[in-house]
Length: 382
Image (cartoon, rainbow, N blue to C red; front, side):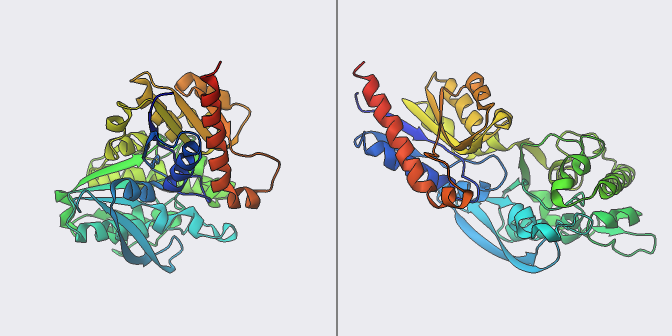
């Protein structure tokens, strides 16, 4: 087989390997069979966990640190990235307000706050960036973005003229919104929200009912949280003249999507498409011969805008073959074949526990990629 150009564009394998580490393992495996091919590694993400790392890796960006509070108010350090010679910032909400920062037994969306995201945005503003990209997946909060807005200077007041308490429960006390002290630098920055969630803010498909339980909400709390978000939306409509209760995407990250729309005039885009644009994926793919992608698990949800599908859709513009590598496959993974992926391979060679699978992830990807390459080599002889 003549010399080929291969684009390797996977997502991270959550809790195991970054997207760049996955891409490096795939390249290593392929080079064992095709050492002289040209390989281009482009770490990907979809707006959720790993977005920050992937974009910084893909663009040779830099990290910055801010001091803030986690969802339950504990002091922590959180990071954001600078891209494009410091003109753009990439923020991953989960680094300050994420579910993984809270022990499962302590998760409490009634008091969990998105304040940390506000501090990350202020940190980006301090760098005098022109654009801020915010990935809002993986949040522990259901406060409608209230904490974020308070951190940025806006006042959410109760009937006594005092700031309402942090957390989803505090929204019930909201009487008046005062944006007069909102950080004025926000007016000079373009805000792009990377999300693959289209849920409205409230109702049976809203933030509380769909995502509240995984954040620790009981059935009764889910109803209360939804009621509080409805109240928040009503005050926003009255004071800001913005209707967000039914807006697609407003329910992302426990309602942070809605606050970003109403208070900061942000634009919500599909997370995968944002990453495609920022890493210049199409520019690399259009001259390729083969595209390799992947993520930790491929299942029926993959077809709804997850990284392998986003990559495959770009590749199919140029009629290129696409092979996906996954940590695990569900029984209904074949649905991805109708969305542009031509073959899917799992890296698990035998029955093993999760800890072992994580520990051997890199080498298992190398082995799987080598076997794929060997199969391609064999096809030349048939």
